[in-house]
Image (cartoon, rainbow, N blue to C red; front, side):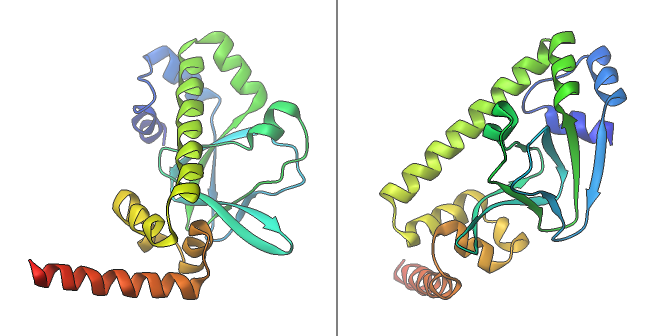
Length: 199
């Protein structure tokens, strides 16, 4: 698993042999079954997660309904940031929506890693910047795009999700009902066929 982790981390930084050995010594890797909860609201986050294999859903409970906010796949870091940094109860929930392998980075281990090897500070910085950019894009999407445009953008940028994630979660993520998503998909498919025919 360490080789796979190092390969996944390449998009953040390349580790030297000593850094990789230290990381391997302190790794905690867990496997999750489909639909198993990884972290639940109300708890204080003391772990940063890294998706080695699989897909994880971030959702919030709003008036008894689950609202999907994001999906994490291979090579993504996951952290309930406010809870982790301020040590307050989290409002986030993380659920494996397919069989997943997740690396756990305990807060105390993280501090030791960053104190011992500056490269891990760089990894944390890049991961945080990526998360911020993603959140800004999502916010802009809900302000500037229609549900159909959000659907088409997701299809273009991460179409594989449609093969991995149940439709009701995709719909929630896009801010529509499953029925509305079905209509959007049908309209988009018909339009695509018409456009192809006109060409």
